[in-house]
Length: 504
Image (cartoon, rainbow, N blue to C red; front, top):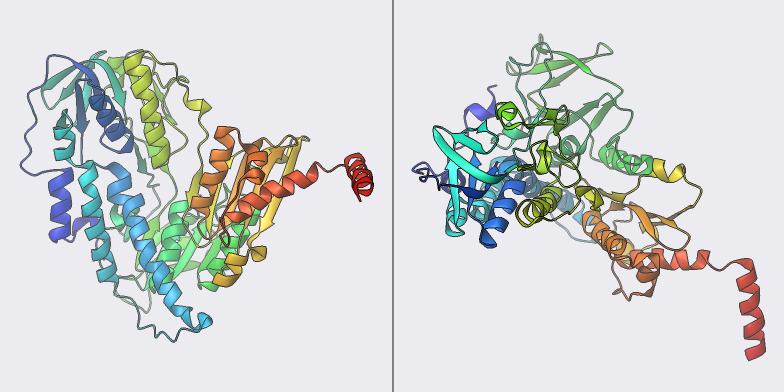
């Protein structure tokens, strides 16, 4: 089997995508004498920085090496969520009889599901298109950006002079040097979405968000899936209860999970099966056959080939080195997004780009370390978190640990989706320090808790708010009620009892 990236499905959807994010007939403009802001990288952080600055009247140039939209549009959030929607629907049809619906499941047309993904991606690409940037007043350059000096970027011979610059080059998938990897059908998420044929056996190396999302999706679309990770549980960065809930779901989906294992080599299968069948040899000596392997072992910042030394910008293993205001070691150059942050999420890149606009162009002093950034993994059940972790909460003696299982939620009971829970860590005065949501729509529910944190509403505000019934969100309100009950100390309870006796 060849690498899917070598034979992309050049259909009308892909052509429409290319016309928007890397127009074949594009000609780079003649550079202006000097720009207020030059942005390197056309992913989320770069697009927000460029569009935002241009909208405020700045003279802006944006340089992109490959395709506008970056990882999120082309190989990340957008295509994965489109595919997850197909997988979710397949799963719901299979379980329809549990709701009294006599639906017959006739299988999945994987090629059609992927075509749908490409169609939706091409439509969404309009927001990130070169034409939209041009209409907003941004000079768009395609090519390799290399710093020529502390205030000059070279793009294929064109010199872009700037007062300020923003590096937003993103991150790329890690591809470790495992023996046999170059001969085997091994892809990262950067090539996966070019597949058109459902692999009979799908191997996922890495039990983090990308591996778990796509592994579960392909299992529900019809592949026999094996997930391998050296960690001792799925989503090892999340709390153990969340991992356990997801593990139960994986078991129900028939996914073979191999934890505490690493892949030592890839080799062609020696006996039986298709000629295109390969094996991954694990640390314990066992072998896992597969037709396609997804490598999801992490991502690293893109910082090479930028000429950072010429610009006086320092970078380390974790990316571009920035101060709390996102300024690099060159005070005229800032950095935002995955190349400069441990929060490698689209919404985080957006927030950091907004800070760059304020600090770089308007002498602001906004700090990125003051942000409260939630995240979500869109498995089934979804897993979302914000603020301090369960480990950090356990180290403090002033933290209340409050939780509510969804099996007590009327809406969840009616829908037959009672797996998961809400959990919040707060101080005794109701200040929310962190929260986890596991279950259906966890990514939406964590937004309520994040808002309560950032607005200062806290548990008191959640308890005082009126939420509609019956909803899952009502459990957030009831979490606030649980906190209110912790304030009913024995002396207060006695005083209330005496008062009410007097009132009778």
